[in-house]
Image 1: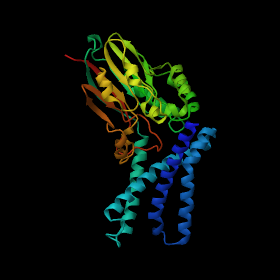
Image 2: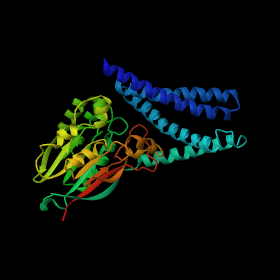
Image 3: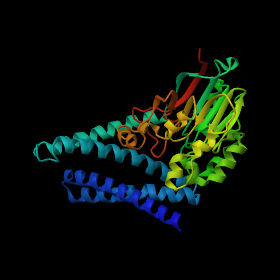
Image 4: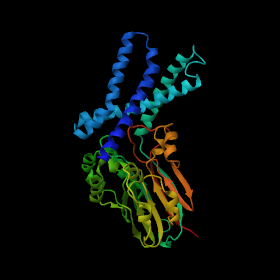
Length: 373
């Protein structure tokens, strides 16, 4: 019963925010339409677009096929456009004191803001369609055996496979990883967006991911939403070794540890200390810790982890949304040093929601391990 109420609360908050965004943009757009007919058209269009994303969520779970895909594409794209329109209009309102400082120029400034939002939306769609960039890091690990010096691992995070990012997109990522020829492949959560059934159809493709030292994975928050046990079973069927609050030796002297997603645990009010459980009593050696959300880094460092790999944040995905994300996750993207441990937060290879990225390109991380002197 408690989980049902949490779900109802979550949906209520999402729909309230979604409605508020539409209301604000309409408040600024409608005065620009002088003709009553044009105002009615804008209101009807706004109502249809408001419905698009909720309907797409229903269609995805109802298995409506191509109809669901069209709805999801329209709804998700509109989500990104709406956010950028709201952001641009809000900036103009702040600059003009919501029209009080420059009453004669405020309407013109708002029109310019909408044009800018349109241009940014086009740029974001183009950037979203691009293949992830390959970003290089070199990490020195204390205790790394000399024979593992120079080994290359690839981190794939936040692929969000499903209806929007399907088999063709996945084939591109398989080719990118294959070209790198990593010794170790690490998947740090949100492999599955929300429709586990759509990803189960990609199982033959997922089996093509390969690395000599194995393919290892942890769950993200979206695996919880899509059905945790089902998602874990899918990853294991693909040949991935799923680390669920445990550690295992990938090679003599190199330990991999991982936990089920900490953000989802917090949302579902799950008790315990999974980081401590995964890391205490692990085999000796240099340790790499996989944790989808960039949380508990200090605890991991205090337990002797040399490298922590995370994702989840997408670096905001669509600028300037990252400023809001940073409130919950201060370490939002890139490399950080925490108590002698390196933390690397990936922007992710895929996208959530809008098929758009603005000034925050998707990425695949290639990390070369080095033995400390």
